[in-house]
Image 1 (spheres, rainbow, N blue to C red):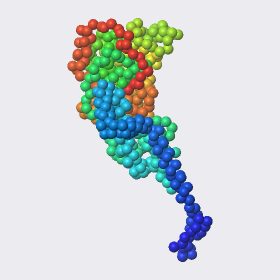
Image 2: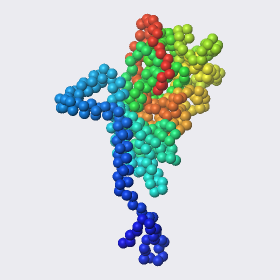
Image 3: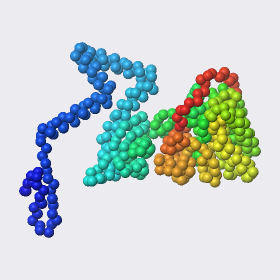
Image 4: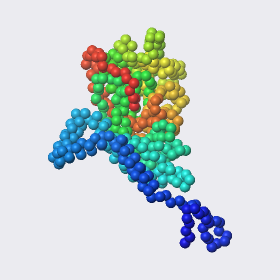
Length: 489
């Protein structure tokens, strides 16, 4: 067997005279003492970096060492007991803070170890590790944020990759990491988030949520998100479109919104104008609307109510012009929700064309001019086609419940929504599983989020209506209503 020294570049001997020449590059042997210095420096760098990245672990190690040197085993037992009692008290007294600083970080570390074990295999088999100059380049696994239901995995992309590459392999990623569903969320250029659902937080029916005395019209609790956190819907400063087939649970969202707004209605800081052409859904709690606003079911009465709302809105705009840019609810100028159920009947199916045009004009005016002066339109419909609801693009926030066709998800939530995981057509038609389940797209976030609205039963609605008639209006407290720039949905 031929050998080659470092200063040789020689052709490898081959008995075949017709074989192409094969060349070996020269091999230069690095002295051992240089290798030792480099490896020692790398080890020192790794140790210092670890200590700098984990200051709490450094403090814990220092406390354990000092305790051991001074008190031996009894001291360590005492320290462990104090830490345990402190954690238990923290968990009992401030569960939210304990979950934020202890439970979730620990769970995230554990789940990251799980993804780290399978990362190379899943990326390679799923064809998300491109080859370059004879090497496989793996996307970089980043921080993992976990809840009891979902993991959000940060990923730094290989140069030349895009989020679409991962979206096309979402099913491969879900199976590879043992998750139910994988959705790809955009993060920043060169990075993305993988949202992997381990358990379905929306599998069971959610009972009606309690009525909280403090109302934030930019974050009304109406249900639960897929990660187990509360689903908060913004109504102040926006308009909301709800689309879903018959039996999808649109009433759950509508009544949950009304229920969450009750303290603001009682205080006089909010009003509801309810249009109910179906004469079934909203009429069940008509006492609420008669007490804190208006209820109309006849088409002529509905269009009259909408046009009156337009007139009042424009009068308020003229009064506040030059004085303020954003509306703050007061008793004099309350926040007004225009609630329209089965809006498609009023804009497309109503036989009287003149009334249809008046309804369209009134809704278009409210949705284009109402946000700044404290008017919000919440419209529900079954058919989201453009010819049925020509002003659907005037609704910044949209909710897609169970739909009949895959294309309808993009009609409601915008182009590409279904590719980003909004499979509204696959929501179960079984009421116990799919009623109230929806995908939400906000004006501020193009990525759809899966949610489920709480179920407000007939008894709950009757109790709300009876309470409106029996309970006197309380005096307004300064903190009854907060208008914060909070997150919606």
